[in-house]
Amino acid sequence: MGLENLARIRAIVSDVDGVLTGGEIVVTESGENKTFNVRDGLGMSLFLKAGFQFALLSGRESKAVRLRARELGLGAVKVGRLDKETAFAEILSELNLEADQVAYIGDDLPDLAPIRLAGIGFCPANAVDEVRAAADYVIPVEGGRGVVRHVVEMILKSQNLWERCVAAFEPRGTVSAES
Image (cartoon, rainbow, N blue to C red; front, side, top):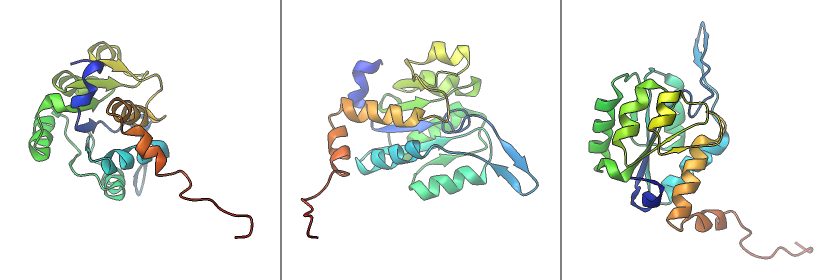
């Protein structure tokens, strides 16, 4: 499946470290810290509001990822899962979707199987060579810099839903100077 088939996509499954984050993990005595891009968060929210599904699949166990997923209202969240092929199949079952209805975003070797199995595979510009070669589309930004937002916009625009998302932020009426 290539970019011409974005119309079939009903969900996105995304890796976390290196996609939603820049790939850095800060480990402190109280745990780990992650930095997420706010535009990715809005993109995920818009995607959900447009009637799609969004899931996270990470090789690392992470309280920060679970918290962020809860804040955004994401459904399926699989963390601490290095066997991403099996976890991807579980997500498909939970979401009641076929692989060709799902876009996958990943950046490193554990993401190879789901990128190849998904209907369409995406990766950030700084993904490892093997993932870049396997992906259908390389997003022109690095991980943690709006990769997910870029994918969300591509899918929503391909399905003629982006303008409706933008319209929700436009003024609802005229504001007079006397108000």
